[in-house]
Length: 395
Image: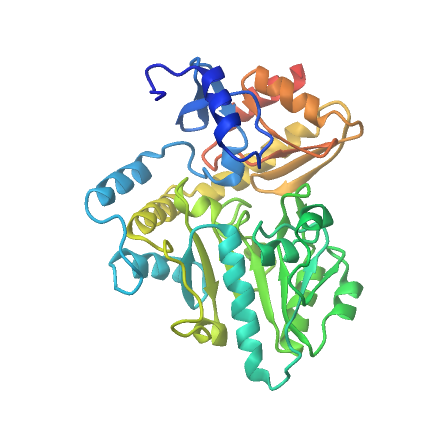
C-alpha cells in the first residue's frame, strides 16, 4: 500500500498502468496535495494550476469553507436513499433556484448526468403536445455534453461517437452561431434546442447574442425546450453567475456541475415553467444524487462564490489575462468570457508549450495542435496571471 509518507511516482504510475482502465492520456506527474491556486507533486514540486480540474476547482484546491462543510457533514450523515427527505438537498435547490430564476432542481453526480436528465425532461414534456414525432433535439457541431450514450450523441463531434454506434436517435447538428441553419433545423418535431453559452472543449467559442436570441424565439414558436448546458460556464466562470446572463435571456432548462461542489462531485438539472413539474416519481433518479455530503459541499461552494464576489473577480482578472495573452508571439486570437479563455496560435505549438509549461511549474490545457485553454480558479489574482505569463513567454 502506497502511503502519503512514502509516495514513489514511478510506483504509482506502474500501478495505474496495470490496474486502471486506460481512458485517459495521463501526463507524467503524480499530484498529492493542493492549496488555493497551487498543487504539489510527489516530490514536493509546486505547480500553478490554470486548469483547475477543468473548471472544477472554482475556489481553488481545498477551499477552507468547503473542507469544513464536508468534514462536518461526513461525521453527521453521508448518504441515505432519495426515498427519504434530508435537510440539505432542498436548501441547495432553493439557493440555486433563487440565484438563477429557475423553478426546481434535480441533483445527480456529474455534468453528463445532468444533461441526460435535461434530455429526458424535454422528451417527456413533448409527449403532452399531441405530436408523436416531437422528439428531435438540435445541438451544435463542436459541442460537448458528456460521455454517456445520449450525451455523446448530443455532442456534435464524430470523434467521440464513432466507436459507440448506433447512437441515440433523434439528434441533429448545426454549425454553432449559424442563425440560418438553426432556423432551418427547428420545426414542429423539435422538442429541444441544447446549446452551451460558450463552447469549452472545442476551444472556447462564445455564442453570439443573435444566435441565442434566435434559439429562444424558435423554442417559443415551436413549443420546444431551450436547454443551456452550463456545466462549465455556470457559477462565476464567465464573469457572471451564469453564462446566460451575458445575453439577457433565460433557458427553460439548465445544467450545472463542475464548480458546483468545489471539487466534490455533484451535478444539477434546473428547470423553469412547465418543465419544472414534468418529472413524476419513477421518471428519473440518481442513487447518489444530492446526498447530504454533496449538498453540504454545494451549499458551501455557492455561498462562498456569492459572498466572495468571485464572479466579479473572474470578470476583472479574466479581462486582464486576455489582454496579456494577446501580447504573446505567434498569437492568432484570444477568445473567452471571464476566466474561460483560449489562446489560439498560428503554428501547431500548443502541445509542446503545455509540456514545457508543466516542466516549469504551470498547468495549462492544450486543445488540438494550436489552442491552449485556461480555466484557472475564480480566486486567481493578477499577480498570479503575471507569473503564468512569465512562464508562457519562456515556453
